[in-house]
Amino acid sequence: MTDAEKLEIRDITRIERIGAHSHIRGLGLDDVLEARNVSQGMVGQKDARRAAGIVVNMVKEGKIAGRCILLAGEPSTGKTAIAVGMAQALGTESPFTSMSGSEIYSLEMSKTEALAQALRKSIGVRIKEETEIIEGEVVEIQIDRPATGTGQKIGKVTLKTTEMETNYDLGNKIIECFMKEKIQAGDVITIDKASGKVTKLGRSFTRARDYDATGAQTRFVQCPEGELQKRKEVVHTVTLHEIDVINSRTHGFLALFSGDTGEIKQEVRDQINNKVMEWREEGKAEINPGVLFLDEAHMLDIECFSYLNRALESDMAPIVVMATNRGITKIRGTNYRSPHGIPIDLLDRMIIIRTVPYTEKEIKEILKIRCEEEDCTMNADALTVLTRIATETSLRYAIQLITTSNLVSRRRKASEVLVEDVKKVYSLFLDEGRSSRILKEFQDEFMFSEVLDDKSTAMDCDDH
Ligand SMILES: Nc1ncnc2c1ncn2[C@@H]1O[C@H](COP(=O)(O)OP(=O)(O)OP(=O)(O)O)[C@@H](O)[C@H]1O
Ligand SMILES: [Mg+2]
Image (cartoon, rainbow, N blue to C red; front, side, top):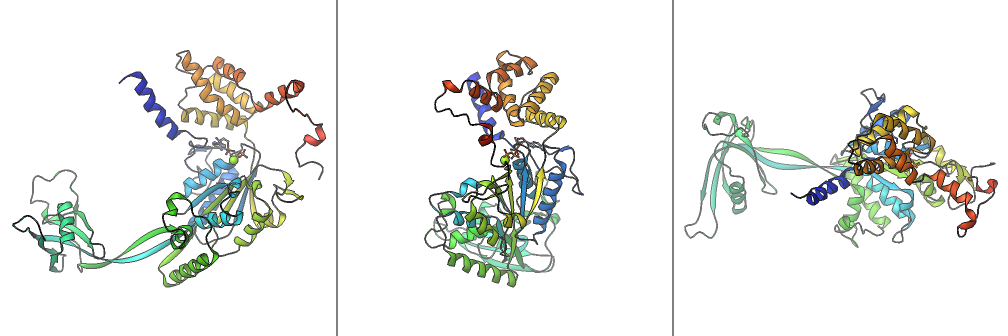
C-alpha cells in the first residue's frame, strides 16, 4: 500500500470519529447518581450532571410528562455536552430529539408546526403485538421435488415438544425457508404463522451425541415444553410523529425518509391521539415520553414560547430540556426583557439547572480528554501552557489549538506536541479577545467600522 492510500483511509475514519462532543459517552454518574470526578468523558460540573441524571431517571420511569428543564450558564460551560450525555444515558429505549432554536424558522412550515413535530418525535409508542408461532424440535423432514425439476415442491415436517408430536404439511414458501435455513432433524425451530418466517434456535440437546462433527459454534438448546403452538408478544417502538406521517394521506410513509413531511393536519393528529389512547386502554400500546432538547432556546420567539406553555400541559408531552447562555435580554418578537430571553410565565413552569465556569484543574482534564480524542500526544508542559491559554481566552479556543498544534509538531516530525508548537499556533490563530483588540486599534483602516461607546455596546442586560 502506498503512503497516499494509507492517508486517505485514515482521513475517513477521522471524520466519523471526532466531533465537538464525541468524547462524551454518558453523564458519568454512579449508582446513587453522584457524579464521578472524571468519567465517561465528563469532567466536573457535578451538580448539573447530577441534576441531569435525575431527569434521565424520571424519563426512564416514563411516568412524568410535560416537564420543562432549562440548562442555563455561561458559554462553553458544557450545556450542550450535558444534553449529549443525557441522550447517551437514555440509550435507545426512549426517544431523544435534539434541535437548535433557530431550526424552527423554516419556509416550509410554520414555527408552531415545526415545534409540534419536534414534540411528537420525542414521544415513543410501544406497540405490543401478539403473534402465533409454532415452536418445536424437528423429528423428521421430508421434501419431495417434482421429477421435472420445476413446479411445486411438496413437504412434510414432524415437530415435537416434550409433550406432543404433530405432522404438518409444508407450503412452497415455507419449504424455501427451510432450505435456506438448512433445517434438519434435531434442530429446534420456530415458525411464525402469519409471515411464514422460519427461525433456527439451535440443535436439541438430545442430539448432542449424534454427530461428532458439530462445530464449536453450534448452539444446543432444550427441546421446548408444552404446546407446539404458542402466542408470543412482539414489541415495536415508533414515535407519534412517525404514526402521523404514515397516516397523513398527502404525504405517505416515504416522507419519513426524505424528511419532507410538510404540515400535518390537526385532525390527523387528533385521530391518532384518540387511537393511541384506545390502544393504551386495551393494553396494546404504552406511551413512552422521551426528551426534546432545544439548544439555544433564546432563538425561539414569543409565539413559540406561548405554544410551548400550552403544549407542555397536554398529557402527550415529552420532557423538554432547553439550553441558553443569555442573561437578561429581549424576548425575541417583543420589546420586553426577561431573564434568559424567556418569558416569566414559561420560566415559572421550568426548573433551572445552572452550569458554572470550570476551574483550571477541570479545564486541564477536559483538554487532556480532548487530546486523547484527537489522537494528539501532548507533553505535560505544553498541556499546562494550553490550560493557561484556556483560562485567559476560552475553553473552545484552547480545544481548537489541539489539532492545529499537533499538525505543527508533525511537520517537525516530532512524536509529541511541545510548548513551542502551542506557542506557534497561538500566534498564528487569534482568539476573539485579541481579534477585537486589533479591530479597535485599527478601526479607521477597516470598512464600515463603527466602534460604539461603552454604554451601547454593553449587552442587553444592563441597567434593568
Ligand atoms: N464537563 C465537561 N466534560 C467534558 N467536556 C466538556 C465538559 N463541558 C464542556 N465540555 C466540552 O467543551 C466544549 C464546549 O462545551 P459546550 O459546547 O457543551 O458548551 P455550551 O455550554 O453548550 O456553550 P454555548 O452556551 O456556547 O452553547 C465542548 O467540546 C464540550 O464537549
Ligand atoms: Mg451549546
